[in-house]
Length: 311
Image 1 (cartoon, helix red, strand yellow):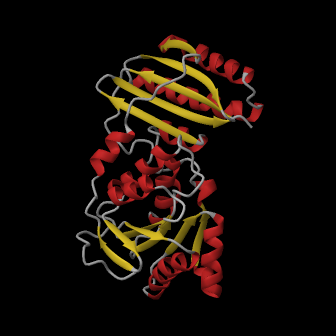
Image 2 (tube, rainbow, N blue to C red):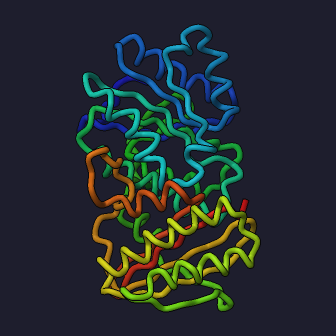
């Protein structure tokens, strides 16, 4: 990919629409080779089938590329910025960094998708002013028209048919507002209210309910940490109390905590944690332990919902 005439700042975030394996290779491999020629660090985070295409085309040059299976590392879209993108970019600051990131692929569920498009929007905030290019491929054969429209809204530049142009639909605020709609919970969710004195009780309540719904012992430990972080956040930052709900959904236990606080920073939980950092790890840890995290925040309070696998 050549330097875009539409680029107005160091950070670049183009979407690549491809309709065949050949178009995928033609849109990604030259991007990587150009980076290698310029001595720029390069990485690819994508589903395994896409990684294999790139490896095969690069041959021996693939040894210079950092490969990540996005279906594992990015199963929870909220983990991608700190644990995939910034973990690579932040340790390589001597030159521009090039990353291919494919967080949305056929098979993403309707429950996951809002977090995926929110992630794509937040990339623009997380890397503003950085010497980083993040190229995001989209399978235009298999993804719906709504997904492609959202890609135009979350990427300032789009590439299709080998042509690069500015996206006339680029508009982050409407996308982020749509992703921040209230989260509705099922009427049968097990519910408990808590305050400062009830944190151990709320944790035990969650573990009992999850165990009754088939969660394994190993995953119960993860859920205990999620509940501890979310309920403590409510006590410290959310008005001193909150409501905890637990229910089963597919093969996951859903843990939801609602309080009267307001989450002002849309990137909360998506900053890498520094080794010397004493606090501010709560939402990061929740993202790390969960297959999915959804957040709604506004003047009337904040709801954080974590999906933890049963097995």
